[in-house]
Length: 443
Image 1 (spheres, rainbow, N blue to C red):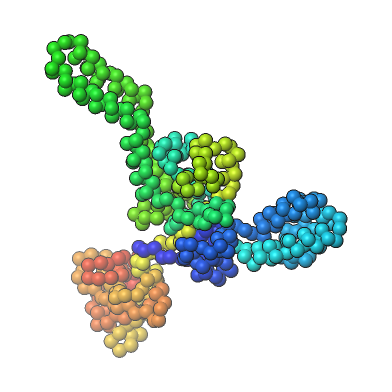
Image 2 (tube, one colour):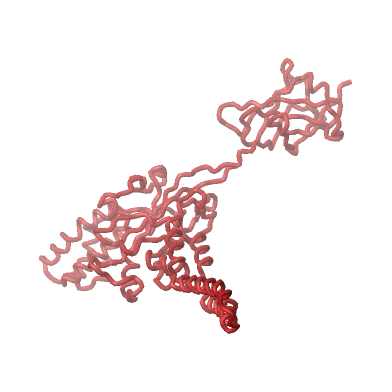
């Protein structure tokens, strides 16, 4: 069994397919090879479709007081790739005046046409959605250290193909800012290192370790004291107080590390994410908060203290793209489904149709290349050592059809009436095909 790559590279909040899928008419950006996209490529990756470009441009014109009804103008402009026709329909929603009309047309025409040229078609077999986790969610799920260090994005990838699985390769994130480019999310192997350090630095764990150390020192020092009250106090501290505190303030590190291992994205082949056929899978990718969760000031507010409006604005400005390939599990095992031989009126092999000392039959099946043979064995008596073998030969590259050539003398040596057909790959590996042939016994 092996996996066969079917060629599908996907990007999303936006989703794309590669140039190898050009037959599907899908446009891509350099087949997602460069780690650093150009400014134009980067902008195109942010779903700058004609509709979104139009909405942004109309909002700017409306703010300038040039459009009386922005909603009506936008609706009239959509649904056409011809700018002049679309603008002609929408011009009735403009403020009065030829000067206003000319200014709006000039401001909209080039962005609209550029967006039409750069419009990206999404494939119909992969979908993606994203959601930003709040600080409290990330802290509860993965631990305080992860929540303080990273912005956590939940990504759900849907594989709509009924025939092929989808293997995740990469995930990148960018913000809707001219200073932000698409960068790779942190791999879970790196995030686990941060989480492990957070385990040792967690205030709860620090105080529990201090308590264990005090209990150990007190227990060892009790041999130097003869007072029963001291020894009783040490016993209470060790056997009651510390266990009680650990129960009151439980350690969730193991559960959090398990969630990190199960949900965080990694590109490692040992832990690859495979989306099943017609299925979906969620995962989480991380963006360093110190780099991206700021407003450009020297001391931005910590991510955990952001307001609802700040969180919503940041979530709406984030773009996530994912990449991978469709794969199909291919069975390379050879098989035989049909054997067609010259037969006589009784349905037995007509050996009179042999050519010289060779009797040939047509074989249909799968993966019939290689050094394959067909073996005829007595169907009624398994101990019968007399068999006949024929070598399979395919014509050209078609592995579903072949010819098998038996030696005429081997067939004449068969004395039973019915023989089962076995496919032989090597001397020790034969497979029953479920087919059989009849032999007319020689007199």
